[in-house]
Image (cartoon, rainbow over all chains, first blue to last red):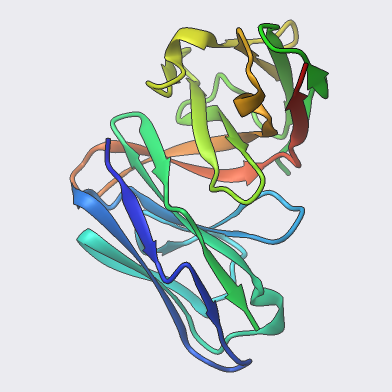
Length: 106
Length: 127
């Protein structure tokens, strides 16, 4: 099974900062890659799918990129409401796996 | 508007069978490219994918839990039921169902995105 390793596991940033979260796959994978945001007590919310497609209704300060083994979530101009844990996820041959999460503090 | 809601027991004893129902609205499971996914999340951990029921009745399961899991349509057309047999305290988690839609990735393979999630239901397994 493909393993996803996120880094960093946590970070602290200020409002207005640009934040980058990385997810590395244990082997080369397709673009079937997603990013989720989860706020305390809430279910995960889809931000990005197909590595770089912004989900409808998600602010444009969120963007995704990457190919092969390395994928990135970027938050331009961090906002107070972006305090959350972020998870990467891969979908491969009808199976799915998640990274361990990155907690973003503001 | 798509909504999903999980329901079922909140507490079970080891070896019992967990049956959860996902009741949804805003979509039909007979529409091409649509599916319902079950996931769970233990406190402080990442979500874990459990099972996926597709619009064409195809079923997929996590390899590590496949022998204990079953996903089916419920008695109503807008319900999906997850069954997990022989539960253990390690199965304690918040269980979610989610709507999925299909798309083709950069290799031309069919993939799914989990775009709308239910609020989740907490299940505790303890003797």
